[in-house]
Length: 330
Image 1 (cartoon, helix red, strand yellow):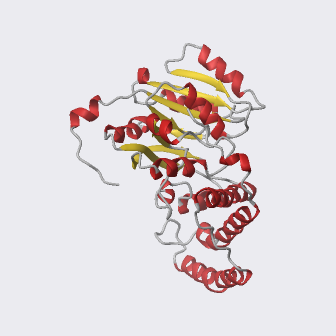
Image 2: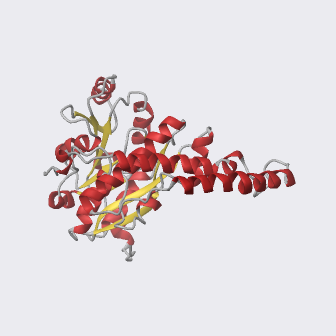
């Protein structure tokens, strides 16, 4: 990802029309905070529209969206509905079709964009070669052990997806794509349930329409999973995604750990890592000493093995539905 020098006057006057598309499923509880984050954006309000797409919610998401848009809101909110296909990608396509902007921006209802988010995410598009920009995803402060573990591992960070061995891609929690790239490569696969962000980026990059840029200062915050059930579901989805991308793009499948390898890692944890961390803790009993092991350190290995098993199960059990091969077009 090369950075070419750009004239300062160009960057300050570069304010294209932007369409922010947010798919929402049963997001009634998330709406107030999300709207506050959108209201606080520093990007000129007259240059942005927010297309909030209800995806057949069973709560009051759609009625609340209609109510917000009917009020004297200082930003342009356009409530939409996608109730034919239950998929966030189908909802995003509904938003794209209704959008008027030159740049399409994607985030999720449970994300919390920081004030400079849009401005920083759009800035790289001043270079016409750039057709995709990925912003960073940071964790909202978490109290549970699992949240703290995921925060330390930077589970949600774009740095993992931007270094993908097949091709880099950005996650739709914080992604912007030039409309012309979507016109050429097509929209999201509406029947895909996971992996659609990688798929759309790879199709655009594969057709040499332009390049991808990372905007580290374009930050959205997202909450990590707080329970074992949520964590298992998250990592099973990662496994399913890899299976789907294997079938769509030929991505290598992840190797399964053998029972022997699991056993070895657990024994090593119990006999080597736990005594080492306890010894360190006893040597530094005062709280706050740098390098002092925490409970998160102590349980790092078993949590890692738990997520690895969930990902393996997701990859093993997944089967790409035939209709997931369909690509929507503008």
